[in-house]
Length: 302
Image 1: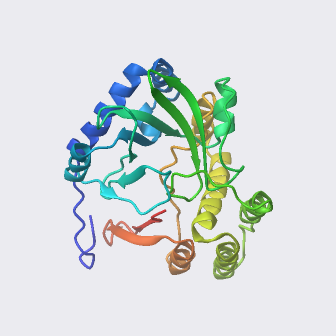
Image 2 (image 1 turned 90 degrees about the vertical axis):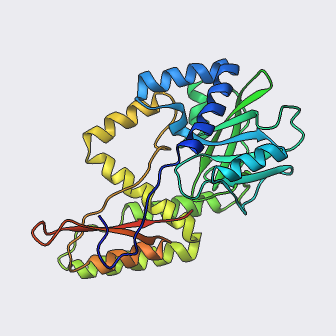
């Protein structure tokens, strides 16, 4: 529940929008046999669904489909897209993005492409023996490859690292080195201190350095990727599930959220670190005075 001081947050379901996406995906899978095979492998090997990995879909543009997606709650996104594309996202539901594309030769609203989100595109291509070219430099914020084409449809694999756009990025020559250096500094940061306040202060200073060097969204991505690796080394279930997903070349692209424990005395410092990385408070949970705990939900919009 929210605390009395919180503004009321009413979380609503959006079954019509979800049904729209699922119907488009089902039609796409029917027409693309490799996507159908991947869907079966996902369920049997990872206990997940194809839609759980769906980054975005590309639909043939038209006045009717624009009106339909708007009625379902999708809103235009001001993000980089390829020429002829218009991006839409649903701000109140966890649904894949939609790209409306002009001059596809398909009926308006038909899904002409679907993109799955993987941790490393090259590993997905290697696993499935697909000799495709990857657009975007290694470790860049957004990379993409065309994996399979069938019946005029295309299945894509994409990588994201704190980026909302849809255009593969070519970064400066030193970018990969700077990215890996930032990851290494966060992953190997000291984690044991006699004084908890000193430990949090040093962590905040490192977060500020990474934001200054890499930008807030990339710094957040680096820090949380490192935290996930640290968690996985201590969690047997995490190791098992990661191995299941790696069997299909997926990695941790379905990472949804992380939870951190904190004492009350350094809680405000933890919030300051997260805010430095671009996170903003959402709702709070309070179990009551006798329970002795509460939780603050933080969200990074990118």
